Image (tube, rainbow, N blue to C red):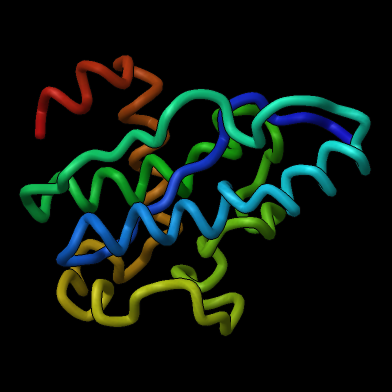
Length: 141
């Protein structure tokens, strides 16, 4: 098994931080699951390193940028050459190649121009980030 050091990003829409922290506890805080995972893969310690980090998304432009960043990450990390080969994200739903449930049709409906041809949007994002580093990009928002 290849261990991925840093590769967990979620965009979750909740009105209440209590709900988010309970969700994260269920995902990564259950002691039985951690024990099972560690035994199965012959490892020790916590499932995720460091504390939960979260960012309050205050505007639509930043939310769209986060979606692009999250979807492009597997390619940037050299895990795939083509994002349609990465089955662990909802990119395939966004480009209409899979009919899953872990994506927001409402979000796409709110920003139809930004997500009309999402695969082309990601190609443009790739060109953009190759010219700048991530810090500079986030400062734009």
